[in-house]
Length: 123
Image (cartoon, rainbow, N blue to C red; front, top):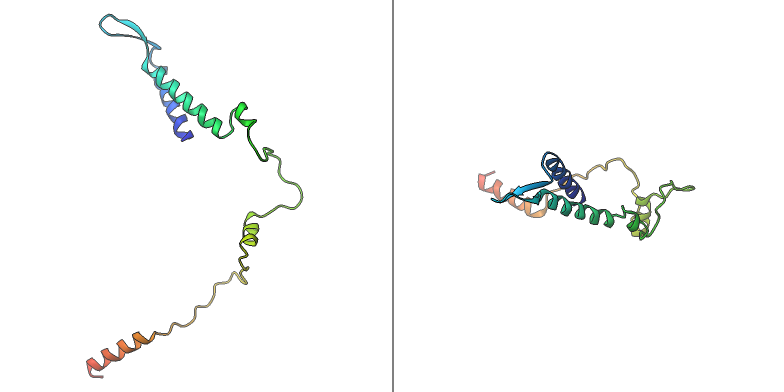
């Protein structure tokens, strides 16, 4: 949504660049603000609200919780996948080599169907 709001703002800004900020409307030619200005204000408000949701304004950044550091961790790095596997108690995979598939045996109903077909053919 933030990307869409920024794209809409940029599109309106580009279109407004070739237009007058004040237009003369009606039969009397009364000066009035270009309607694109109101659209641009709306898009600016939407962008500002969404930036605030992501903590991308100075005032919203102060309300963030958790680590705001961009410095890499020092010491032992934690692998999030390994931690998830430990938390879920998933047994580790013994080998990454593909398993040999067991020879598939036909189930009993398939054997019965095959015998019936053979008997019908007169074998």
